[in-house]
Image (cartoon, rainbow, N blue to C red; front, side, top):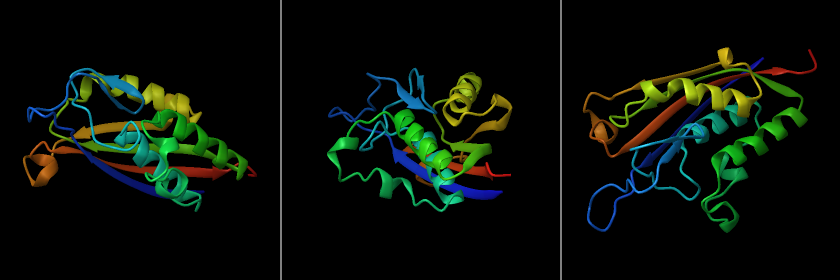
Length: 167
């Protein structure tokens, strides 16, 4: 068994008017979250999936998200992070590993995550090829402290356990 830790953060995009862009739903864990302002990023900025990808790659010593999907490569502009996770899962399986479980903590003042946690867990389980009981998703605020606590963006911590498929 191997354990990996992932972290990512993205700030909310701001329109020319100075308000957050609510025109499109931001995806978190591959699930559109109505009313969540868009996050800035080269891909679709799904901060939750990005942290999970880094945890998986860290556990398997296969690099990090930037080495696989650099933000300098136009191929990844506006890319669906679920597709990126699928590619990483293919690589992990090819390297002889399977996912044991993941534990994810989103830190944000908005949106409120509780109404979306079950959908996010289900979608992540599907993408990770594990039962939903192997996926934990928690939302926390930062009680107004630092930029995340001031509502500037979202930060995510993820831990993944991978197991050798060889037994």
